[in-house]
Length: 476
Image 1 (tube, rainbow, N blue to C red):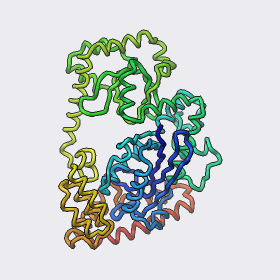
Image 2 (image 1 turned 60 degrees about the horizontal axis):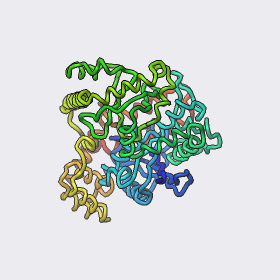
Image 3 (image 1 turned 45 degrees about the vertical axis):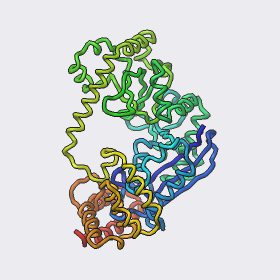
Image 4 (image 1 turned 90 degrees about the vertical axis):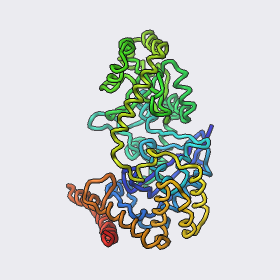
């Protein structure tokens, strides 16, 4: 069994494409969850990135960001040294597939570092948020949670921590290392509770290969999906692969009788797949929750149908290969139609990692050379060898952020002016602009009963933004 590399990221914004990491921490534990090593890294804000005031208030990262003597580039290199040292392991996060893993990949992309290092070379990904939600669903007493206005359990770590571990050091709340420590304690608590069977099952699907084998081997099984603020269980059977996306097994939800669907012609079937009330759901191989059928059978809908009829439906699906092929083809066509509708929207470099694919082997080798040399003049001389425009542009951005004098006057002016135009824009954008940040500060200042500490914090960020505005207005 592999070690767990528990990691957490704090950023200066909420977007995975347009924010940057300001702090990352990790705790390496053995399979029995005993600590082996830890790290905690902080860095300065990347030049040209506008911090989101609300995000900085939540993670209390502004002062550390300002006082750090480590650049973002150096922090990312140190992080990758830890990744190399701890690999192969199971990289474990809280909402990692929604944020941490995605941001980490995009930050590696923008730093010309290996992009998928934490899920290649024997490494695996584990997101413990769905595991905790499933554990709470089937074993309500395994974790204490606050309840939302809609009567659903709240799974934020800063809420779970105090409820379950009152001895936690509250002075470290909202820091990356605190979240790692809280996640580790949640893992230990579930491991030692009645939910241990879900904890153990979660270890079997951290790799794509093992997850696929389990999905295809089991005729019927329970899986869980989270939507509308609530975790829900489904009794399912594997039906086909998605016609457009690799590593997307599709599951048939067995509360639906497949007999009428099998009779549909292709166009009617395709139309049915686009209507509300999904009878088929994607199960991407990103640490899916796969449990025995008995778990879903605890719910009224499956109890009333009964296991014999549910098995009969699953067998009907598996004996109709033509139906499975039609479903896969229809799903592929629907995805391509949606993709085509978006093709008219030009992609910025920050958005093009997944859309435009991997760098070529030749470019990977050049980027490796880029990191091997220490002198920024030499790094700049290497960049023209990169053929992919995305990575050559990002390389120039790295030089702008770390050694701007190395750039030619025209190169510097082009990058500097482009950044100024983007971050001074008064329009609503996908990234945080200075006007957006200033407006957010004003809104926070106007909050009823705002504390003096929060007001002082906003004032400090406001001073930083004014200095940033003055610097970039000269280029506008």
